[in-house]
Image 1 (cartoon, one colour):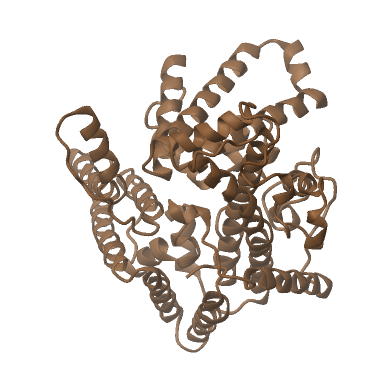
Image 2 (image 1 turned 180 degrees about the vertical axis):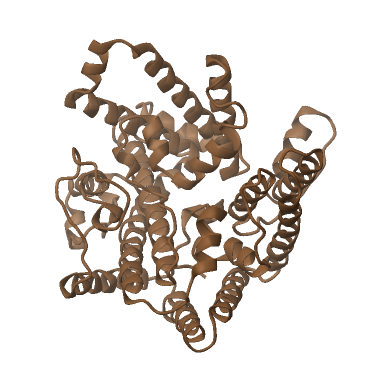
Length: 512
């Protein structure tokens, strides 16, 4: 059940909200939470009924292990043993369903013995609910978690706004909210939640899905072995970079909005990463909760940056390689993570080099240097996205060869060309996209919007995120007023029109 589907928008969402507040008003908060948990399980069951057994099994086992850890002394050997058993359980579960076929192929290529493991269907959201529960167990072992009810824990893991593709929520962010939640209708929560949801639905339906119609043909042509021209390759790469930007921004904002309707506050997960002035800044803005998890539960336990330069770079590379592998069982994902690890290490080297050099620091603070730094960061990220998007080395190689001009500047072999760019990317009549040159305008306009137009957390007055004052060219502050309600209504109607104009498309992060 997709957030942008008819059944979700006009059946599941209104029913789950109305029943939740009705139970909270006339029965009890506990009854409302029970309903929300059951609704979340139904939401998951809708995709593939058999997968619900795996989710329930994972929740029960982790809840029992977590409660056992809460009763043990934080530094005891028993705690380490129980935690090890919990981590092994989660990693084996994730490894079997997501990586068994991949590991079997590696083993077969290194030896003469082939395991012949068939590719196992990937259970939806297993990467996300596994990371949520690993963090829970680690914190239980450190004495940071008090025992909680099975109901609250089940809702913490299965709550449908974050279950499928995040954000990766932390127990200390969610459990206290469930304990204190009154489950009573609040018009402010509804208006704020609908605003977030509307912006997310717009980003998904109006931008991401439209951009896909140009990115996909380029990569499809590459997979067929077709020669890709430089123009097509770069526009395809830019289109995919913007597609995944608006797709993931859309999902993150829709998830925050849905949770807020119920009175639940989610952490921010996306903060205009294409404004980043360096690769470290990019990862502070992109998939913020995944970056937080990798930092707190992998990079720091490995030693972080406290044991010398070599160990720090090793930890960076291991963290990003595992982060890449988390996204998918393919060498392209591993290389994508490795390249990002290398870029982070290079950035750390540069920071160490300029330490104490005031003239260089002054130069780096200039607007011109900041602009160059953003361009370099953007190009680096786009090149990495080619690896992320490609289904194989051959496909990535075909696009990269096109990008460096091996096949010439412009060619008609692919049947693409810049005139074939997405036709309804903006509120511009699609006929205009038949005019040569407006394809470039469409990509540039989408990129301009991502960098210079305020994002939703900057617009919402209650947001903790500060605007990037040197980039955003306008200032908007949301108010709970009739005028903003009318604007939100118009935007929601537009988003619904776009979303329902064809079959709903899955979010890209649903694959992970």
